[in-house]
Length: 346
Ligand SMILES: Nc1ncnc2c1ncn2[C@@H]1O[C@H](COP(=O)(O)OP(=O)(O)OP(=O)(O)O)[C@@H](O)[C@H]1O
Ligand SMILES: [Mg+2]
Image (cartoon, rainbow, N blue to C red; front, side):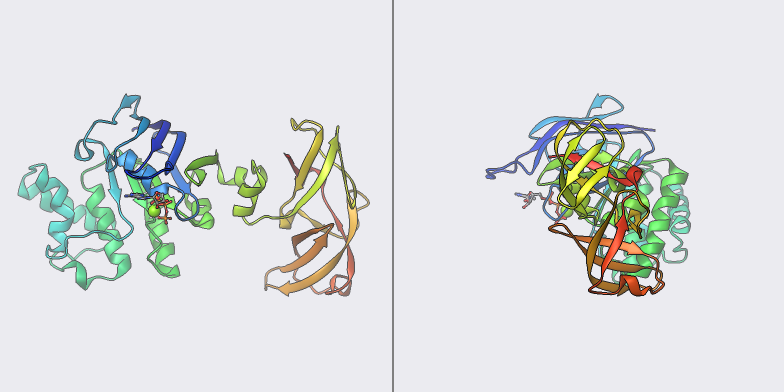
């Protein structure tokens, strides 16, 4: 089992004026599954390639089990990368594609054949040995790429958007396969995605990057319940913000005063954040207020309300059952349970 530490990692591409990755420090435990999450161009692939040794590091360190690997060539590292576009060798059979890494390592033919067979059964593609990559579907190619990476028994698996080229159904299947492989191999896994839902479904911990910088690192739950900034909250689909001034356990806002739990956030200007599903429809007599409903959208298992709270557009998720009081255009009552309110320092 291998842990990965990134220390003040920086990447400036030749001729670039700005670093693509800035001062990135991250600790990944042995056997952990970590998602590198962020919008397009934020530096996810660049980071992954520095871990795999496919890009030089401009400054900072990559450590595997405490050993600096900056100057170790990719094929000598214990990390292997699987690319978004598979990069299978088109003229080789599936068997030769998967066995390639072992052939390069001069493993004998019989052993290669045996291990290719094991890998094909792992990714549930037995019998595909003699096909060529062009004769496979996207999902099958992705599974072959995974088998090819795993056959060398890497300690660290690097996956660059492994699910983005697949349709919804295949994505579910592939996600299950990644979880299964991760579990049975105990391989430390870093996977890149720009999809927060995918990160939440797969990862033990998520590292969220914007513009080359790490903004938050923690469990999926922490991103929902304790975002470090409005930007992080918004990336996780929550823009229920309300500005206020905090004094002790009270926040004064334009729509009234709210009781909040004790927190480390100093008194002064703050922003209240609350998840759409944590807001209570109705007047509980505590932290309640009236607000106009702009839109009411029936979603089957729940109903979404677009509500104007002070100057802000909020989303509220409620029971799907129709109640007249919560019709579009009505001024309705809502309450904020104090233990569900998260406050951010301005
Ligand atoms: N080889 C390169 N030379 C110069 N600039 C590069 C190179 N590769 C990437 N960049 C730049 O570095 C930044 C980060 O790119 P990177 O590919 O790491 O982003 P990403 O987060 O993986 O994005 P995406 O989700 O679109 O794949 C971008 O601004 C990109 O234009
Ligand atoms: Mg990328």
